[in-house]
Amino acid sequence: MNRSEPEPLVELVGLSMHYRVPDGGRARRLLKAVDGFSLSISPGETIGLVGESGCGKSTVGQIAARLLEPTSGRLRFDGMDVTKAASTERRILRQHIQYVFQDPYSSLNPSFRIGRLLEEPLRFNRSHGKEERKRRVQAMLERIGLDASYAGRYPHELSGGQRQRVGIARALMVDPAFVVLDEPVSALDVSVQAQILNLLKELQEERGLTYLFISHDMNVVHYMSDRVAVMYLGEIVELADVDALFDRPKHPYSQALISAIPAVGWKDRLGPSIQAMGELPNALSLPPGCRFQSRCPFAHDRCRREAPRLATIEQGRAAACHLYTASEETRLQTAIR
Image (cartoon, rainbow, N blue to C red; front, side, top):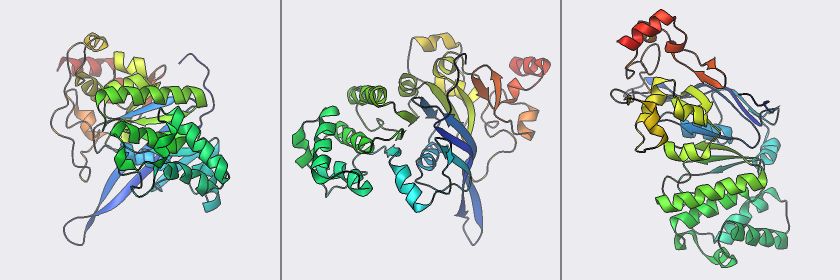
């Protein structure tokens, strides 16, 4: 990248989330949902986090929003280590970090009216009086495209797109700096998706928001993101500016994801399609060496023995692949196979 880099707002450093899972009898096996995950997000930036279902994207998002305690690693926010924040610090932190869930219906209390739902964050943080809360609710409803009468409705009276607008509004009521968006449009019709995505962009520009945008929809990620982190079985395998990634994906898994997009236009420049072979491995019995080696069309002996590390392979791009750390001779032999 040629631009000067601002200080990160959010830093995830070596985060891991491991679970002990019963294995039939008394034995318990280790599930590595997230394993050594590191990522920095600059103020005002949108990082897209992509990968197949089960790769650990939502777990990363929940750790970043302090909804889950990681097994190991550190979370830094605005220069401060908040991994083991005390209860009073967490209360303050919740004003700065918010989460928008995938399913807006299940995340909204069905017994509360919309006005009460939007007031709750303000009541919890004890930051405003009753009249000011009502004024802010009305202003927020108008900003997200709903009139004040919606304050008296229940979630089941709203459409999916309207509920998601309420979910976004609730996250923004306390004026956060960082918002985790976990598949925020995946349950919506395409036309409604476009409205919500445009709303998110407008709100980001108005409020200077920083987003971690989690999705498996590559077209949506292409539209929303400044940079993209490609995740596979708990690890980042490629990190790059959005245009660089979509124009020239380097990691074979990134190439397979982009080859699978049912789209035309910029995708036509990618050349022959690359497909990941077989199914996602069982996270309880990961393959040795590179975790993608059992599905990679370019895998060679080193891939089966040694796990690659995420490393810079060119300006503004990092990848975890032996194709970019091997000698030119090895790369040529691998490409010919």
